[in-house]
Amino acid sequence: FEKIISSVKSENVNWINIDGLHNVELIEKTGNYFNLHLLNIEDILNTQHRPKMEDHDDHVFFTLKMLSGIEKDILIYEQISMVLGKNFVLTFQEKENEIFKRIKEQLRGNGTARKRMADYLFYRLIDNVIDSYYIILDNLNDRLEALEDEVNLSPNDRTLQEIQFLKKDLIAFRKIIYPVREAVGNVMQEGSEIIGEQTLRYFSDVYDNTLHI
Image (spheres, one colour):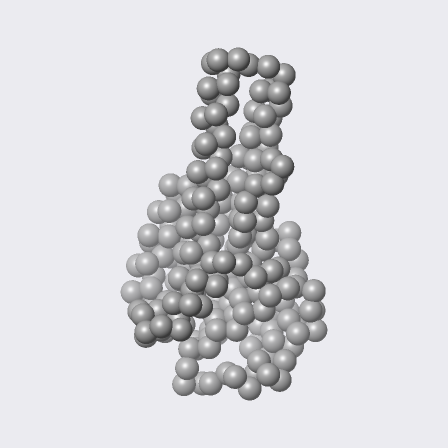
């Protein structure tokens, strides 16, 4: 914890990412240091929490699901929580992921993200997570097309079972994306003193993507 806090500079945009929700003490200390509401800390530790957005006086809390793939006809996902402050972004996830790795690599360069404020980084993180949903959507679409061909050519008992599996995954996918759409919509409707107007316009594109998905 001391190492984390010692790296925070008031003149910089600070991104603190914690992988693994098992370290409750570290998460609680970090949350208390940045004045997070006790209920938000509980939400971070509750991996089954529904995606949502909350605007507090000095920070915005946002939680959503990261979809990592489909294994044995089961949708695999984890919870990611984000907190936006005036000069910081906190992210809490169950395990390290490739999406955040890519953003970290971009920040090491001299691109647009490095020149913007914390609210832009917050937007980029959410946008990249939602963009990854298209990969899952393509997977589901491919399975659907294959099943359509199978039904037309040589349907059997396995076909019916695969249809049931696909239906289950589609329902799970919808349950994940629907509240995310609602949460992004709340960012646009409620706004926040720490989210600039330009960044709010970017969230309009994110909302369109959730509608499309």
